[in-house]
Amino acid sequence: MALKDAVLGICPVTIPEKVILISSWHIWEPNVLMIRAFYFVALAFVCCFVMPLRAQIAPAAFTEASFQNLSDQELTTLGRSALNVDAAQWKHAESGNFIYHYRHSTVASPAAVAAEFSWRLVSKELQREPVEKPGKCHVFLFESDLEWEQFSRSQPTDPFSGSIYLEGALFVHEVEGPGKEAGIAHDIAHVVVRRFLGTRVPAWLEEGYAEYVATGCSVAFRRARGATARPHSCSVPDGRFIPLAELASMAGCPKGEAEAGAFCAESERLVRFLNHVDKQRFLLFLGAMSKGSTFDWALKTAYGARYGSAAGLERAFRPYATQEMALPFAN
Image (tube, rainbow, N blue to C red):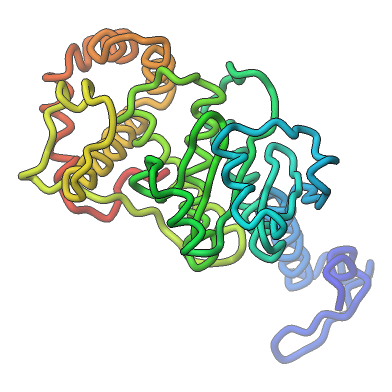
């Protein structure tokens, strides 16, 4: 029986112990009214919740093309170096906001879906217009461990995803497998932050925000496909907590594995904390920091007397940063 037929009231509907023909003669029977109400609610749920989520992850036009037919053929030095790795094997394609260079479309097409999904969610979250010149971001997808090792040997990789984002181009390794959409989302968050906020956002804030929104994007992406998922946030080991004044002054992620882990975890937790306190004030804080403001000035401008300085914020934030919890603050 078709759903629309049941809603319109012209098909027999089986209920326990009897069959009722839904027609104008029976329209006011209580059981019929209950059934009709149920189908209207079900239809409304599908239209209002399921279809919009499915639409968000629907693939943007992923169009394969020769390199000469791409809308943007300008590559960075590192991009040209990437395409020189077994040059004949590279394929190319475009979607709404990206140009992809890859080996197999079975790898690139799902990555494109996750990338466009993340772009839409992060740009909506930022509530801003891009500050960089318009144009598509080039994404290079490496499948071979050996090729990636040779290519990335002398390049700084992202501490969370292991990818490289340099001069507006993104270089990604290990794009297949369960949960890889989180890595893609993290990488795309870096792209969107720099496109929309420029390059003056401090290291801790960009890294923390990228991981914060990547968690939300990954969960939303999997839920939209019918999977059960919940966000996860790593706590900071109490002995490795970085005073906020020191965190704010760090030029980049530390080199040591333990130090890098603490830096990234604390950065993500701080972004999550500030965003939960007041999302609109966090966006003001983010905007001020992107323009070169000091941590204390941006904090006071956005949050007023609530947190007058890094020291005042630290007293409220440290217990949250170091506590292992089941994520009380949802994305």
